[in-house]
Length: 122
Image (cartoon, rainbow, N blue to C red; front, side, top):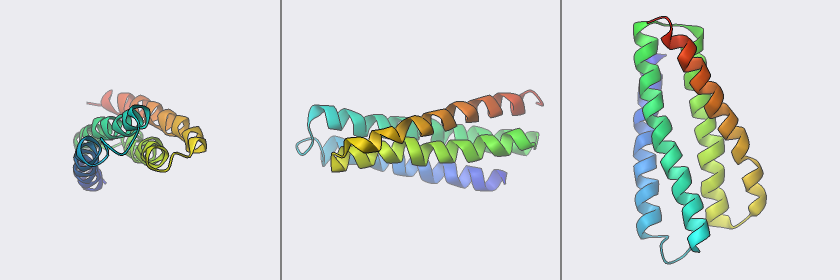
């Protein structure tokens, strides 16, 4: 499992950098300032949680535990729901997609709680 989270973190980081560059260059003149900020928030949180997945991989290697595994799963879920919904909202303009975003935020929060519990075993 640690290897899976390390790979997921690396791939998510790659996607986050690509999304940030796409937003800064390709979308700058196509989206309103508000929607561009929404897109950039998605990329920023994806990057934060790509790094968090790498931390999970390390913790899960040093002290394997169910909380470490759940932290990784929740960070992945949060990235899809939070960042994914923000990307979709910004690109489509469909405001209803913003209702999904808080679910991803809750997954992120729960992931950090799980990571804290897992880190207690270090």
